[in-house]
Amino acid sequence: MAMAAGALLLLFGRRLYWLFAAVVGFVATFLIVGRLAPELSDQAALLVGLGGGIVGAVVTIFAHKILLGLVGGLGGGLIALWQVQALGLERGIAWLLAALLGAVVGAWLVSGLFDFALALLSSLLGAQLLLDAWPVPPQWFLIVYFGLAAFGLFFQLARSKRPRKRRRDKED
Image (cartoon, rainbow, N blue to C red; front, side, top):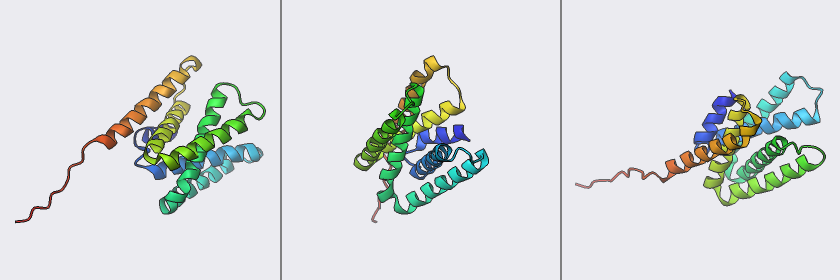
């Protein structure tokens, strides 16, 4: 499931922004519940995360202009947390500062540069989900991560640059 969601986000996250919101809502809720209520069973945390994902998707569909900044913030925060964890700097307050900085940058990117930011964040999140499902040796992690993210970003932006066929209304 993570691999399929990662591949879809990597390649089509800009077009399927509701999927981006659903994945970010699920992962963020699941991780927050795991930190705030570690006594919950994995199944309960999974259900709460699923609820967060559904809420993220539904709200994005109906109120996307207002809430995509929030989703961008959560996505940026998640990406920052994963990078802090990959670098082994998740002790103390570093994880919170990284999450806040990532959230501010993610929200700013989504609100100011919607299409590009959505393609970038969905590529980064898709690459992370793919690597979570497909383990890579630690010495190759950042190279593969950024390689996948760059491929996803290029793929999404190249698709948006293609000339579209225009319908011409012919008057006889």
